[in-house]
Length: 316
Image: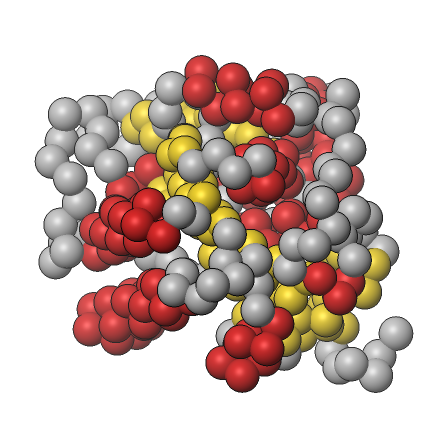
């Protein structure tokens, strides 16, 4: 059982990218234990969300408002993901992410800041003996790795706690675009009444952890003043086996898992990391990690209801 989150009470917590999946998952964890006046969630535009039944105003980034808030804890989640490069082009994509990194680097010089939590990615590190990401061919991974090093160095020089959380694969009810992610997309298929189709002809391996539990661990480390770098963990499973488990948990008798066939054989796709350190940290921080079956049930129950967005601040 997860122990209650107990901040000291003087923390002023800034969350960038608060309207994204991880931001909403973290808000779900913080809203019951952090006073609203001590929480500033920001994003690229003004929004009003309802998170687990609670109304949350997300403010558009403002240099003046953030400076006046004088955060003690920064949770940096704002980033342009890989899919945005097709829309923006390489130069605008790189410039946009570098501007987000520079904004945080500036804040790390503020005297009030005591801790930084930021999310990186498995794409930032060498995997399977392959070389690290290239700025030209893989700017997302390259920039994430650069950000890791910049933040860790700046925090070390200023005695600021720095928690780097490399996110690999997550689940959970606060997913913003469920059709983009295999876990939630398979659940949507299972609920549609048809067979579940795994669209990868080759075997795909992942480790899944609830996004809220992951962010909870990262934030508790910041509260405890523990600088560290860790990879997200969770249950290791092949996606075809995940689809079968989803059918079982959703309760879909008579339906089956079908796999698309590819013209050419491809190597297995294993995008995961050793999760022993993550599980150790979760235990030390008092966060219970959900089983894969629980993750499926929680994600299915929350799709479309855990978080919703109001069209205007006047709408209830």
